[in-house]
Image (cartoon, rainbow over all chains, first blue to last red; front, side):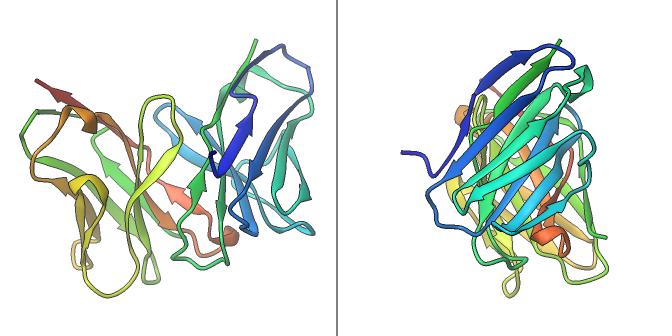
Length: 114
Length: 114
């Protein structure tokens, strides 16, 4: 089984709808991240969490919110989706929190907002 | 703030030829540098990383990268390309802040031709 899973893998929604993307991990890591990938732009950080009680905004948090329900679960919500939020979304985890830590990525959720 | 620049959004090589993917970094502190690979419809996988010590870093699948402080570079190489190397490659630097999230380059798409 994969260490970092994301659901759904693909989602098509309409402008104005609320949508939640979910991430679960079995690696026992404390730190979790949400990134967004757009063609030609690489990955950009949306939110990150040190633990259940510590959530922080990243580079492009506007229009998004997150919830850390447990150490293993980190959800990303779009309260009112808009077309420019169409992108590939990745969840990632890392362990104790050093600059040298490897981040482990989920398979991604491809979101299309019509 | 730390950042990386990947030179060339698309690189094409023949099977068996040298692979060279370029990455330059900008950092006010000693950088921790990473190369990730993304195969089609998959998440990102770590190829290799530089933290401290030996400047020539060996990774998986025959890839290696050399940290050159004088040139602020961390180029990825492989002596002989295989068809299976076709993928998107991302250079990244550990942000230091933002919970040690990664700052990614825009990616280089590697095409391997027979």
